[in-house]
Image (tube, rainbow, N blue to C red; front, side, top):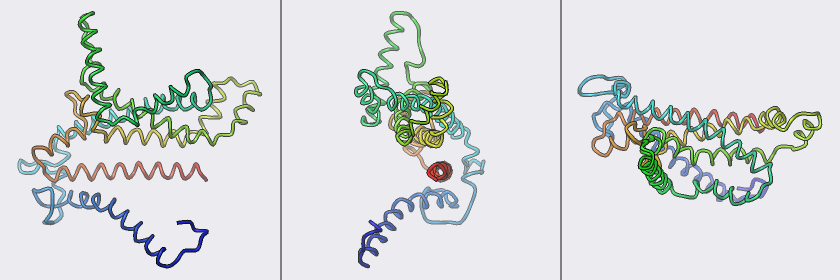
Length: 285
């Protein structure tokens, strides 16, 4: 809707109904799964049988809650540590890439930029399969010729990190580059004219300007890593991440503990989204 143009009453009502229905479509499943996390029932869906916290704290044979399930807690810890490592690596490399592509002129820049965007174009399933096949071939080649078994080249914790980093860094690069386009280059030039080195100008002038975008990009990379399944499922070893663990559980059995962990994920993502929103809002003011 363009506010500066006159609109009929019917158009305004239709527009508001559409927006309301759109957000209801997005929010209702999240509300439903959050409410059912407290349902006093042994089944994952309705009917509602009353309020309970058993699916969070119970430790009986009949009901094993989220915080009593050691395997589930281990998968949560794996996802958190993986997401933290991936987000940190992606933020550092992605920020450096954004600075290089936006500030420097070098040969094959267009081709390299296109290659940097390929993880976003290629489906996650294809990306996971290609990384698995490439790493397996490289690992077999090294083991055959040198007799060395390198864990990174077979499905493992570190291969998951490498696979998620391959697309996480691209997201960071794009988010930081968007902020960098608003940067006033004369500030760097002033610092250079005052005998600052190139590195000093970037560290003391450019990076503080990019800080809101860097923090936001870190949060995005963290959430992408934490919730990824289509790439991770081909690279995971004996330490499953939370999405992989949930997928394997729901294939064979399902209890409301899945609702409980889903509720916590929704809560965590909402908090991260709010932090990112307020950081972006503060940077725009």
